[in-house]
Structure formats: C-alpha cells, structure tokens
Amino acid sequence: MNLAIDIGNTWVKFGVFASGELKHKESCSIEAFTTSLKQIAENFPFIKKAIVASVGNLSSHQVQKLEEKYPILILDHTVKLPFVNKYGSPKTLGVDRIALVSAAAKNYPNKNVLIIDAGTCITYDFINADNEYLGGAISPGIHMRYKSLNNYTANLPLLNPKQPETYIGALTQSSIHVGILHGARHEIDGFIDAYKGDFENLTVILTGGDAQFLLDSIKNDIFANPNFLLEGLSHILEYNTF
Image 1 (tube, rainbow, N blue to C red):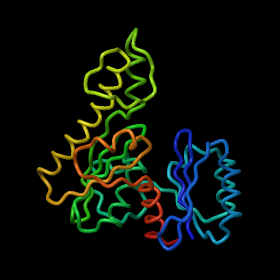
Image 2: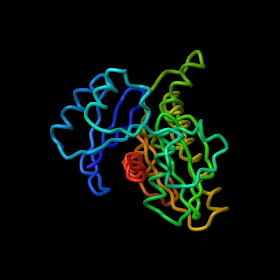
Image 3: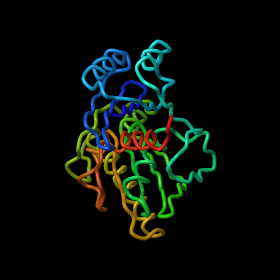
C-alpha cells in the first residue's frame, strides 16, 4: 500500500492506494497533520511508502514525524516523471500540475488530454497523444475572483459562491454571481473549444474543489474526477523505485 499526500496552504489531503486503486481518502488542517498521519498509519498498517507534494508547507517537526513512519518521495522537478516534460521552465512547474498530468498519462495513454483544475487558481494542462506535456494556462479561481472584486473596489461586497438563476443580475449581489460563475464557465468552454480546434479526440478532465460550481453548466463533454491529483501522485510513486 502507498500513501499520497497533497499539502495545500491550509488543508492536507491523504490518499491510501493499493494496487493503484484509491482505498481511502481524507482531509485535515495542516495543524492536525501529525494526528491524522498517526491515525492513518494505525488504520492501514501495510502502507510501505509515501509521496508528498508541497512539503514546504509542513513544519520540520511534521516532516520528521512523516519520515519516521515511511520512506518518502518529495515531488519536485528532479523526480522521474511518466511523461515527456516540454514545459519551458520545468523548475517552476507546480507539483500539483505535475501530478495531474501524471494521472492523465496513466489513465488516458495515447490520447490528447486537457486537465482543468478548479481550485485556488483554475489551471489548464495539456498532454498530447505522444505523451508530451506542452503546458497550459493559469487564471484566477472562483474564490479569488470574489475576493478580488471586494479588495479592488470601494463598494462591492465579499460574497460566497452561489449559483446564479439567470444570466441577468438584477441586483449587485446577483450581478457578481453571474459575472464570476458564468464568466468562469465561458472561459472554460472557450479553452476547451480552442483545444478541440487543434487536437483531435480531446479528452477533458475537470477536477478541484470548485468543480461542483462549474460542472453542470459547461456545455462541452467532460469527465469529473475529484481524486485526479492523488491518483497522479500515486502513479509517480509507483513509477519511481527507492
């Protein structure tokens, strides 16, 4: 069994894998990392090794506790990857994007795949049918857009995301919801259409914490997979032997 750990700025996601399949998933705050790690180790005593993304967000004490339990692979640009990385600056490519592309390489071999991750940012990553990662795009995520409208204007309120009922906002609050959520959906559909114009038989994956706000109204056919990043981490761990 393997343990995949995705560490964000606030939350940590754990995925326990056996023979490449996700058997258990849970999340905790960074502060609760050591406690959750201990509980997972007790519940799944056959875990042999772990992979960690964004280890820099952990304290030295938390890293020590992890190293005491398992051999760990820390994902960075030096790790052997299951795809050809043609990104212009591989040292700056985020480990989350590396993991997502790795999942595409494993789950959709010999296909053109666009991975859309709707999280803090909305990222677009493309791997072609020759297993070459060419790059993608980064734009503000849903919550970032709400915060930006509030931070950079004098009178617009900070709102929580809410599904708009129409395309026409009759009040300031509904206008914000329409602008942000429908704007993001049109952006996503626009990117998908552009990629479809250049690459045949495109497979599109939507993942990330805010995918739920976007999924139902995107006009293009997509596959939703909330565990895609963890699956990619597990595949990288299996691809590397140590």
